[in-house]
Image (tube, rainbow, N blue to C red):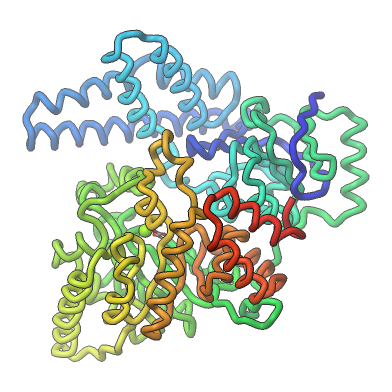
Length: 585
Ligand code: PEP
Ligand code: MG
């Protein structure tokens, strides 16, 4: 038995088998039952086969376009893929330690990494990047079809506890808390996020454990004691008896309250609109169940994770129609494709590399020909999407949203194309209703010209995920600066206020759909800053609704006024923490 002391942020006592989540490396580590080892080894082999097919495709296409010399770079990766120190070593770890395949591959990479770090020659040391690239591809291919932590957690047995390096609210929102009884994290400095979240979910939680996620083995029995701020590894019989007694005292595994259908209102009666962000039409049920009033963001580019036929006009029309009918009378905001050229090329290259699209999506900064800019240069693709959308429009309440807009010209050009498409549909005898057109405010240029853009569109949606990284010039994928990605930076709060004011002056609605909204503490501040519409991942909605019912709008306004005078992120966090005192640590 071993005890680790941290900070208890949500009371209660639970016991379960550890599932380890390494959020920074994007891998989940769990113990595989003996009868599933063969299945895990098959996943590893299938991952390798897919990676090999992709690399061969890439090599062939580079050879065609750039000649054989450049293509030979991929020979090295193909050779590494068959290196006995890589996949066979990972298979050994799966068999010996009974861990899942993606974690085994990650472990092997860390073993490799240590060898590379000791190399003096700078050229050779840099080859670590090639290995990282290959390992990333391998993990992605093993995960294929099991992309999100929620889906991965479905693979996990009942009665688990989650041990993570860190747990962001948006990730926590994807966890199935009916299976996961409690959580513990290494990180602890910014406890206000997790504290509020854990209490709202009513699961015991301890944070600030430093290296628990490394120390604890997947499948190990762990007790989380949120009341005593402790985590106990391999508990004694006495401790287990105490857990059993406490379980009979309290109700079993509390789950978040499902589908509260009443709209969200603050304690002093201010109505807040809560919509859902979804990636697939199938997520609609989850959105409705979680109490979403509408879909505030459908990331239509996820149609490209399927095969090419999903982009046919008829297939798109049917998808949009199904969503509009499924959500009626609530609105569905379809964002036109937000991809860049590389993602589009990967999709066009066919199903063997479709997984690469998801990896590209996870890549941090994408500042090139992307979003509406790309759509305007691919008129066929864009027209097909617009035709499908306008045909579907009469089946519900549709809103069309353009991503990655940096200027008024782009909106005018897109509107011109809409004019052409709708005229064509009318000529073909279609009934074409009017559809509100909006833009994402996610590039600083759009935020600074929000007053001008507001005259051209019917609504704004603030995309803080991109806005923060471009405002602060921080590539989240770059570990050396990723800690500078701070939603509470004074510049971000000011930019939000500026956009909100521009929208209000022009009388158009503005919502916020970045991950910032799914963090309960930040949500309260955003309400104070004057926002009344949010869209977030469905899992975050019940918590948001409950929290909003507990706070007063006028208190949040006063908080926002104080916060806007503060100069540093630390001061802002402290102020927020004080204001939310009764929820916080
Ligand atoms: C955003 O940028 O905040 C956003 C919601 O868009 P995405 O995360 O899809 O880039
Ligand atoms: Mg974005």
